[in-house]
Length: 217
Image (cartoon, rainbow, N blue to C red; front, side):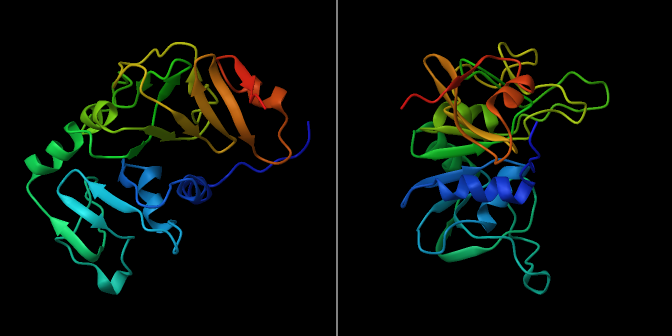
């Protein structure tokens, strides 16, 4: 097998940011998705939403510019862009449930080939379940993209035929970005749109539980 270098977490976030179109309102989940805020193209207006009540969220602040009262839903310090607005938690979820969020980027424990998403509980004894606003976002946002490592730390596939963990929402994922590939969820299952240089399709399949399909031209 040829040598290849998996993408770092920041590189994964940058790859996702590259694909977000001009003018979209986008919510970022906890974990790798929060890094997207630091990678958005400077020449593209993308409006970031946070379910704790921010529209117009900016990148993470420099240490000397931290305002302890300005945080995202994951309690991380963030900045506010010019024109940003702050509002009640209920209004924020009205935006989500009303279908006003163009895109939500979430992490995942597992994604099934039909788009089922499991990202809030693994049933591990040492892990407290934490669904947060993910269930509302998963069904309320117009599109769901997942960004996650291709496998667990133990090498188990995260892209599976059927989720073994409790579902966040069924059939909602449209696209997956991993440290190895970009994969679309289609009517025929997982369709590979991009693979990191040096990694073969067959090697990618070996690290994936579900059947992969080559992208149709």
